[in-house]
Amino acid sequence: MNKFRKFSYRLYQSVLYVASAFLNFREPKVLSGSKSSGKVFGILVEKNINRVLVITDGPLMKLGLLQKMIDGFEEASIKYAIYSDVVPNPTIDNIEAALELYKKERAKAIIAFGGGSSIDTAKGLAARLANPKKSIEKMRGILKVGGRIPLLIAIPTTAGTGSEATVAAVIVNAQTHSKYAINDPKIIPHYAVLDPDLLVGLPKPITATTGMDAMTHAVEAFIGRGNTKNTKCCALSAIQLIDKSLYKSYLEPADLGARKDMQLAAYQAGVAFTRAYVGYVHALAHALGGQYNVPHGLANAILLPYVLEQFGRSVDKKLAILSDSLTLCDKKASDKTKALAFIQYLKDLNRKLEIPDKFVNVYAEKDIPGLVAHADKEAHPLYPVPSFLDRDALANVYRRALGL
Image (tube, rainbow, N blue to C red; front, side):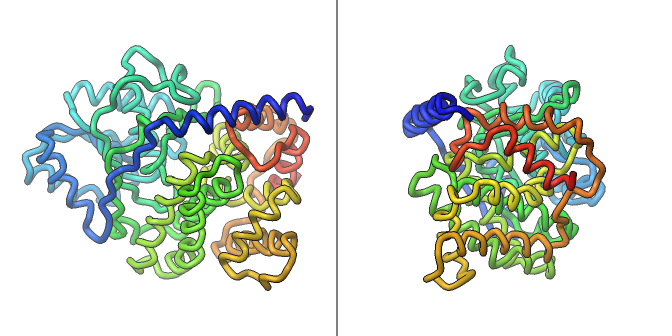
């Protein structure tokens, strides 16, 4: 990558960093603890809202996880409608269908119940309601959501995406297979409900990959150049909580303490990266998700060690801090030794969580240039990565992770 491009990207990031100090990065009001999801009805009654739309997915409906919420609506005389067709990588079509139902039911608030896909769909719907004449495509990028969104309550049923705390909604255009984000503080949910009871029945693979999704958010936020004192503290705290509780929640799904820790970790990582941004891991993962429908958490988990290795010495100092925070090796060791210890720690954690070190499906070499072009476009100039990787370096990460 030539020096002019690097300079122009850093200039863009510097201007954005200064401007962001004047933006309202509000944090959601957090309701946490066992049975905290039952407090939602009081919020609606207090705000005199009697018609809501719930955004969720089919599997959660089949598991009956929404029944207590439905019972609560009926007891509080709140009319409700449910949009349950959200897919793992939510699409523009999901948002438009939810928009049609919201209008038909004359809803006044949105409740997102589910993982990152449901929350991102709800945030996309909120953006459309704030901009009725603006398509999702036209809100792609940063600060393109005008107007005010309706009351938005996020109830995550996984501990990973942090979408309940972030400015971003990641959407797929099913026609072009492109995956991108809408980034605007206006779509941060008003409330985040962190109820560990909702995570007890999560399948092990979902616990694992969503947990590593949170780890990726925290690591990319910490090593990037867009940090504030608060984002560094949140990222570091999230990594320590994940180290303490992810494997435990994987082995003991009913451990509410571990589940609560993971929910807090995912939330803190979300707070960190919503201001500090992410990096190449996400750009590469989004391209894979758009092209091959690879689950986002799985893509992040596999790609993270490869990207950190590709960065080389530019991340040694910051990875050394993370290594020290987890006491991975002698604190008198060199930064390089500590950085390698942290990368190995991530690989070992993936292995313990039964996450493969490479993508197991068959991918074509011919697709790599397109994937790289998509990742390059997403990452530059927005992401304040620790050092820049050119397209050859990004292709190298793909080849290693895809086993080509």
